[in-house]
Length: 121
Image (cartoon, rainbow, N blue to C red):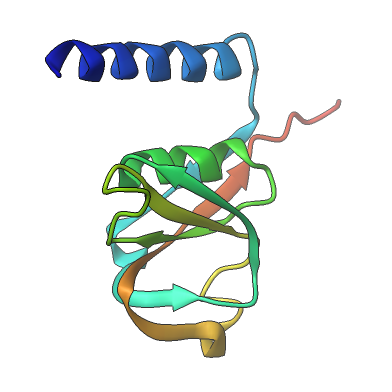
């Protein structure tokens, strides 16, 4: 059991390294604590649903998707207790406050996104 968990961790690390290695990203993204809301979910703006092992991986997938600016994380595991649903959104609660609904099985995490723009002189 311990070997399989170690193997899964190493495989995940290798995949994430492969996906991000050598890619220069001009995107800056913060997930501040004051944009974390328990038992809430942003609806009508989901662009993808992924399955992850923890909330940090959900934030990472949002960062890697240039259209994503917030995420919903289902706190109850699916697929036999090993995967959590992560919904990537292309909007935040700041833009669509009425779409932030009460849903007791989700966490919502908004972000602050910026781009490092290079000025041409």
